[in-house]
Length: 357
Image 1: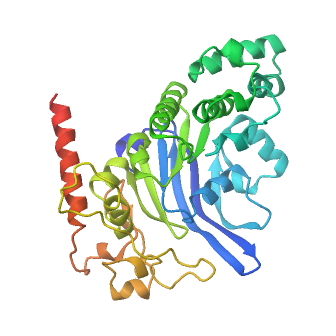
Image 2: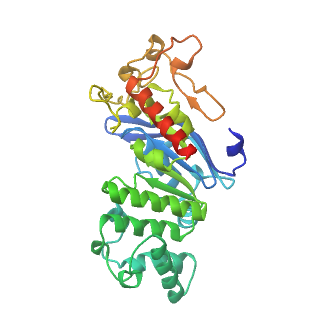
Image 3: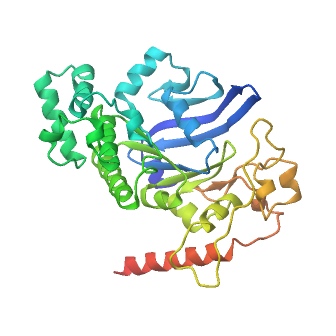
């Protein structure tokens, strides 16, 4: 770890998290040995395609996995205790006071027949044992802080009276009401248009900085990651395949899957004769994960060993790691896609120009 990270307090330490699902077709190996740390006040983004194991990993940390899920092994140390070993009663206390989650669909998180004000204020009355009047004042204050106009009027309205962006602000207010140590955001802007998405991201970042909340941000959108993350974990087929600071991953990506994800992003700077790099193929069947590197079938740079042996996590720097045989000293030297190399160069130039003022 870098000196800067070392100075921060470690809030959460996840090691070798392994989760499977029992289905009629057999055992689905959804998460396979995931490890990461979370530090106070930082945002860790976990990125990858649908089905890569992102949401399953964080739902394990919230104790909200479905009944057919099994945590086969691993630890998640938080305040000296292992979250994965908690009883449901212990989880109720943890979710109420220490770990909160924002889901991608605010309507699924809100009670449609209960007034918004009551849904926020009951956190204070039930959890903090506040009198109703004090709880209402606290709720109005929180509604103002997340940018809900005329909170006194809107306190008595129902979820259907609010737009999607405003409903997401209410969900954020409810999540922050318990003053959690960890905030988990599971694709919270997916259902929103671009303008509202930017507002919600800005709000989450602002609240995080003010409250020094440690945030895990789940997304498939690398554009979102670039705006919110301090560190990034890239997941594929239930594993973390690249892990580093946002600068490591965006300016010096090393895993072919990260290259493919980044090169497939739309780019306003794209020349007329350049094309986006398409990520061909489909993710592997996790009922029977392939031998070797799970990305090998879709990897244009795959080596023979990728089809036979799983790569270890190679250390690139004190903050940057990637699981690809291309980092082995004996591997042939390959270049990232030209489109991506050019994009990174332009991004670095803009960054340097901005620093110069």
